[in-house]
Image 1 (spheres, helix red, strand yellow):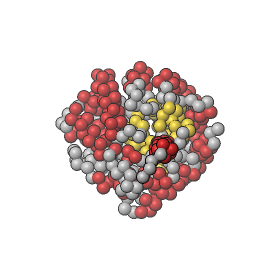
Image 2 (cartoon, rainbow, N blue to C red; image 1 turned 45 degrees about the vertical axis):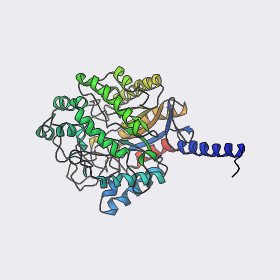
Image 3 (tube, rainbow, N blue to C red; image 1 turned 135 degrees about the horizontal axis):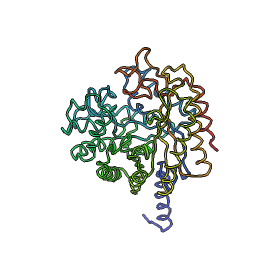
Image 4 (cartoon, rainbow, N blue to C red; image 1 turned 120 degrees about the vertical axis):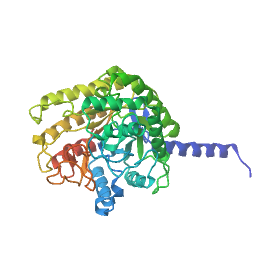
Length: 432
């Protein structure tokens, strides 16, 4: 067969052209912006942490059918990015509360890989809808097992310590030990490796080759928890980002921090841990209730102060993102319903006003091509509803936005919250 120079050039163009086209389907970073299909990618998303568990529900109406219906609902309202729990650890009570079930790693080093078929199905469905997922790989907090479970397995803390309700100081003291526990870190890496190397049972595509995944997140809100753990925390965040990049060259990596509030209230530490090149973007979370930005249940009375603090917090983090020349995502923010009610029929005037302020910060960034690139509200509850006269989640209940340790209905946005969805859609569909 005769091979001409023009034939070689044509083959080369086709080869590299198809590779470039394939790569453009992945979300990437160029300077301070996300890039998708060779264009800046700005989005409004939601936290849908239980999304990978829905397809495992035996009742199809509450499982796969619910998932499809809710994804269609989100897409119709302009929400195209989902932040999802990739895997949970352990069994039984942790910090005095139920944890998410079913559990991927119920026993140390023993994985029920059939449970990842739920995550497979979620990625399959969001891929069909041209949506994207950010998958967090463990948890600083107890509701999915997380760091406390790794510490318990490796006898750094006792089982009884992990199971009883800890006060804030005890929780900080114990959780902070994770970053210097090398066996704990090795256990964490085994779960990460299992998930990142997974081949989707529906698409037959390796996770690392799936454009439906936007990013891997080291954990949900990893904090040093104590100043004495800062050095070990810095080493862990850096090394784990390198480790994930060694497994997967296609996807972004971020830490999952709350911002300065989650780095011992140190802007310098927040900047330092996001500086390595393997960490592609910054995140911040905003929790006015948890941070006592309003008193008791006085949401409406304290709203002006909450809004002012929120804007300052966002802008402070934006300055750091600009300095590092990386995108910033406001990936958690929430507010209870009016009168601090858990009842889905209660109004959401304060929440709606608050959402509008946060979305406006994002919109201004879109209009000016600035670094605030994404905005994921907490959290979508879809068609689920709280069980009457029952405050907390129990196994068998429908999942909603509030994890097991929180009152069901506390921060969840249900599909019936029409005024909130009008605001979300207004910003998401036409930010420019």
